[in-house]
Length: 358
Image (cartoon, rainbow, N blue to C red; front, top):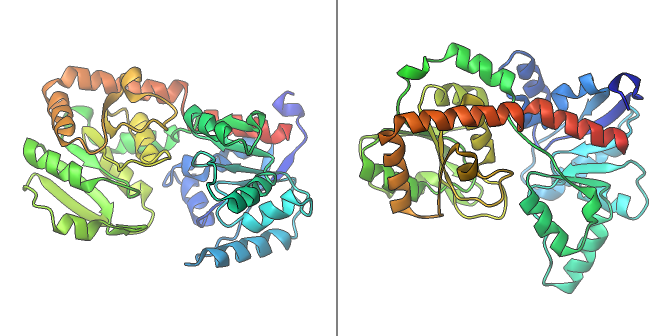
């Protein structure tokens, strides 16, 4: 159906963090829209959003109770519940599975659906997944592994080409140094980062590295790990607080290379930093994560290194610094990939089309 002839749709937009201020910042080009999972561009596709009133709680059960209350008592009528995660939506999903909640539920599934060794947990999990009407995934790898779990119909799993808000990064580039003036490597992000391998590799190369990371994330205490590691003066470490994508994007745009050194995980850890590299047209060195939606080496946008491979990291760092023309070509290919296949405009439209169909 042509977009002009579509019936207007209203969704309840559920996010696991506060959205209102981020949305206002996006309007001022100070927050990347892809971190709001397409919502900022839904208006142009005939979709209005009711924004969930998020509150932070340490305990997951309190998050779930708050979300359940907010959704069930929402006075505005809406057609679909669209969530960036099911964290906090567990009760609503179970109600939907039991036929006690009528609105379709569509969420982003960040990891593959897994099989449970415990039979009772497996039984509950199968009931739980009946509560979803559609699932969005970041890669075919996650979809293929989810299909093997045999808990949710393959026809209701969909790959979305999640990518950067190019307008946001174009403004960053406009305000940053000229490409010829940039130098050094930078690492940002906080989830499951392998700071030990990264610091050891850069200590051996002597290349300049700016590392921006939180003191802790989940069960990992980065401050403690880093304090126990000897490192050379070419490595500068900055501990960050809160969600500061605008500040970090400006820092990244001043450098020549982005590095993403991660621990082995079952999801797309490092993807947010990776798509930032695409938008800024920067070559990347990244841990070889099979869960990404595209192959870094095959696309020619950087170099991947096996998990924990210090020598591999050292070689990749040296290669990029000694082959500037090839590195520049990687950056150009990265930006082209974002413009043609992975960006906010594309994935917002993909999501909107599916929501209208539902």
